[in-house]
Length: 275
Ligand code: NAD
Image (tube, rainbow, N blue to C red; front, side, top):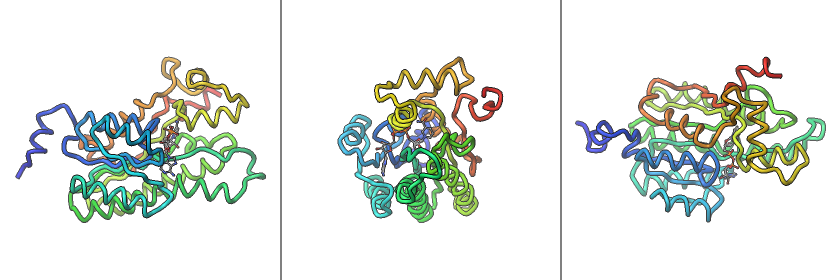
């Protein structure tokens, strides 16, 4: 029997009508653009972040909901998913996007406490997201799409960003192994790997690296466009990544799992020619 939501979805250009999405780190940057795009495509979006004011304002704007959620705390992530179940009775899409940069510098000076703090967010946060989204999706027997934020750093390495690189590479392995386990339940697990999108996170890295606290998004965009993109000398945008997530979330990507969608203007595939 075809539901009203399914009929509406077939008749509309919107690709996610009736679907429910939880987006960690959805209050700004790539997560905010994805929250907007998924909502425009008919999804009910729950923004899960630690930036309460920004997140609540955006959730209001897109007709979604906001929950405070520190992804390093398993309980917070479980609560965000329970919130989705209470609000709409389902979760179809989990975008594990929250992440931080740093610490940077030589491996010889890496403080293990700093490494643990980063891994708690960038990697354990994703473990929490996959674990609790999968539980809810399996229980509902409707399948689902889980998307995790990795990085070009997982492929190329990051200049003196060892902890970040380690966490992002581990995410690729985790997505592949969970894709193997969860495929039998119709749950797909994929990654997106952006590069050089001038967000707050990227700028904080560039400011430290170049020792220039006044660096603006357009300055970083220019550097990336010159050195890190093959496409018309432009850098990536939040929307470029959001479009990739929309595709992986949608039924059009129904046969794609365990995949890493690199969104980098050709940077990683052509890096050897560019250096
Ligand atoms: P951003 O700093 O604008 O956004 C990160 C979001 O994550 C923010 O909303 C922040 O509040 C949230 N966040 C941070 N710690 C959190 C925590 N403990 N719990 C919940 N939320 C938390 O940066 P962005 O570039 O939009 O980053 C989004 C993701 O994309 C990250 O995982 C990042 O590693 C990845 N990424 C970005 C780029 C890029 O070029 N910008 C490249 C590769 C990968």
